[in-house]
Structure formats: structure tokens, C-alpha cells
Length: 571
Image (cartoon, rainbow, N blue to C red; front, side, top):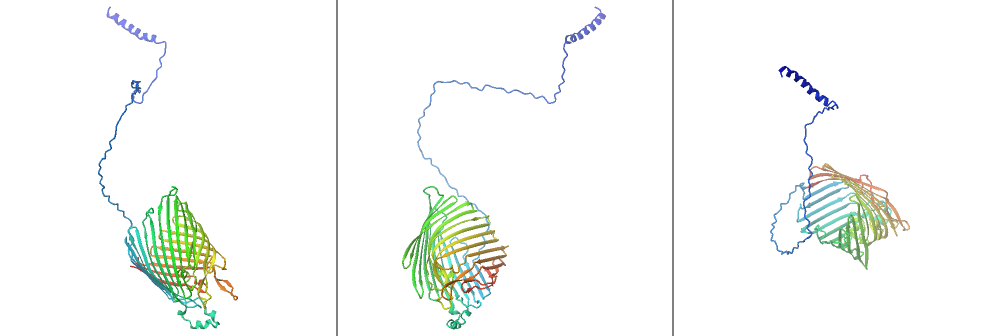
């Protein structure tokens, strides 16, 4: 085969090869899709599931092991040494500086000198001692009345000694008060042929009364805070009173109490406390007219319990009255207190009674113009039911509202003593009384700057014999305010109001008549103190600023507007 033939055959054969596949695949058209991969390739491996069953050989024979053992007790010696713990030190506010002495002095209208002194030991864990001296007098007069000067004097020492969980306390005082029976008008006896000559010859000494009192007391008791331990106190007190008209009274008083907290055998109460109070009062009264020796002995066993916010107490007052005859009396002492809203609302109630002997010292303190020859008796409070609510409106304002109803035998009332020449002294009458007493109080304190108190008392008396509750008002109001201005100025206000009162007089036929002494009366008093330094200050007090006299006792008007100023010094 020559070369030309070969070159002719090769193109023919190549064309045949190209056409052969086209004829084989010409039966179906191929679908062509275009795929674009954007994300990178991430190979994955499928989870492998393995057979977790372990081979097990079941044995038809089960054998339980049995152990036998014993324990030989043996003490293990240990040693533990305590290491002292250093007490934590707390830094608080420094204690306020105390001064041992304090003096107050001043002078006022109606020729009124005033002086008062205090002297005390400083802080001590062992003892406390103190001295108190006071003088207040007036040489003023009241128009159309007798000489009304007075003088009040007091000297007192007191102390306290601490013995571990016990305290010994005591005191000694002397009080000397001078008044004048000025409750008469000269014009009332202008044409009296008997009294007028006496008045013409009378001087101040003839109507003067001087009352001297000595008091001594001593007591010993526990002061530990643990109520599960026995707590106790016992005290002895002696009082002596004498006057210018040979009247005297000796009073010896013993008082004691003992108690402790015990477990409630029934398991109901959180706390149970049992106690016993004992009091003995002995009186020896001597006057030119009469001599008497009487005593009152009182024993009060009681128990109190606390269950959550409820407090209950119950007891009996067993009293013996020893006079010309002896009488035994029993009074209930039962009460409760329940907190409905903690710190904001508490209700309380009480049923009580008691026996009380009027003392000459007590009655002269209430009415210094009483005739010291008056007969003194016993007040028997058969029962008194009291109920009320107390609590707070906020952390700055609190309140107390109560109502009490009492049945009292031999309630003492002051009436004019018509046995005296000038009818310028008072004696006592006794009557059985049913008394209703409503009382309301509001207290507020805004830090140490402002203090306020508002109180109201309403009384309703039902008497068996007397026409009125002589010299006792049906309504009494009181408002006390004190404001501290930057510890430089201290302002105070005391306003009192009382409803009309009645005194017993007699008509021409000798029948008792109720005479109105005064209507609604308001007594306003104001004071200001300027603290120049911490130890020196000046004060000015204004009394009875409405400039009206109050006839607290029949024919005894009070002084009108007067001013008292002075200074105080601490050292």
C-alpha cells in the first residue's frame, strides 16, 4: 500500500468514528443541569449505634453471705485546748458629757424668788448619789382677800448601790411648806359685830399654816434580766407630817413583791409568770380633837400568761382593814391585752377593785387649805371595769383611748368648813359614787426637736347624798408642746382647760346649795429658754397669760398674769 492510499483511508476512517456515537445515542436527549456550589465542603460521619448489652450468665443457685462480728467499745482519748477569742470592738457615738451640778434661779412678779439645785455623781457601775434642793415663794397679794403669800422648800438626798444582780436604794427628804388661809373677803364682814373686830386685830401669823414633812425610805431588790430566775423587791418607808396646829401623822409602809417565770404545764402559753405583791400601811394620826391608829394590809397573788400577741393576767386582792373593827375584803384583778395590729392597734380590758386609806399627807397635797382636824376615812372601790385601745398612727404619733366605770364607797369630797370663824378652811364629806371616766391621749415626738401631748378627761358622777361632786370638773383638757430650735432656743406651751365646778354653800334656812365657782376656764402658760452655751442658759416663763383668776377652791382665787425669769448653770 502506497502512502497516497493510506492518506485517503485515514480521513474516511476518522469520519466513521465520529458518526458512530451520534447514531448510537440519538434515541434520547440528555438533560444538563448547572450546579454551583457556594459553601465549602464539610464531610460528615453518621452516628454509630453499638450494642450495649453485656453478656450475663444466670445462676439458679443464690447464696446470701452471713457475717458475725462484735464491737469492742474503747474510749479514744482526745485533747482540745480553747484559744482565747479577742472581743470585737465596736465604735459607737461617744457618750454625752455629764455635769455633776445644775443650778436654776430666778425672780418673778408677785415678789416670787425661785432657786433650785441638783448635784449628782457621774456614771458609775457601783453606785449613784444625788442631792436636790428647792425654794419657791411669793409675797404677793390678791385684791380684796387676805394675805396669800406662800413658801415651798425641799431638801432631799438619795442614793443607790449595786451588788452584782441586786440593788440597794434609799433616800431622806425634808419638806417645809407655808401657806395662808386667805379665802375670805373683808367686805363680807364689814357689818359683822363679831368677826369685824377680829379682822381688825388680825395679822398674817393668825392665818398662817406651816406643814413639815420628813420621809425616809430604803429598798433592796434584784435587777437581773433573766425572768426564769426569781425576781424580788422589798422596801420600807416612813413618813412624818406635822403642822402649826398640833396635828401629826406617822405612816409606816412596807411593800414587797416576788415572782418568776415558769413553764406552762399545758403547753399553750409562750410565757407564764407567777407573782405575789404585799403591802402594809400603818397610820397613826393625832390631833387636839382625836387620836386614831389604823392599818391596811393587802396581799395580791397573781398569774400572767402570754400567748403570741395576747397577754392575760388574773389574781385576787386580799385586803384587811383594821380600824375600830376589822374587815376582810376580796377584789378581783383580771385583765387582758391583745395586739390586733402589731405596734399600731392593741385592745385591753381590766376588772379590778381595792381598798385605800386617805392620808393627811395625800389630802393636803391635793388641797393645802384643808383643816388638819378633818376626819380621815377609807375609800372602798368595789369594782372598776376598764376597757380601751392604744397604739400608734405612725412611728411619730401614738394614742390611748379608754373608758372606765367604777362603784366607790366613801369617796372623799372637799367642802367649806363652816365650823371656822371665817369659813376659810375645808373639811371632808364622804359619799357613795358611781363614776364614769372617758379618757383620750395623743402623743407625738419628731426626733428630739418637737414633743406634743394632748389629753382629754370626761367625768360623770352619780352620788347618793350630795348634790354635786364638789370642786370636781366634768371636763378637763390639756395641751403640752415643746420645741427645740437648733439647741439654742427651747419654746414651750402648756394650756389647760376645765369645765365649771360647784362649791357647797348654805341658804338662809341652812339648806345646802350648789354654787357655781367658775365657768369654762382656760389657763395658758408659755416659756422660752435661750441656751447661751452648753452650760449657761436664760429662761422666761409667762403664767396665766389670759390674766384671769381661777377659783380652784371656794373663795380662793389664783394669782393672775405673772412672769418669772432667770438663768441656769451646769458645772
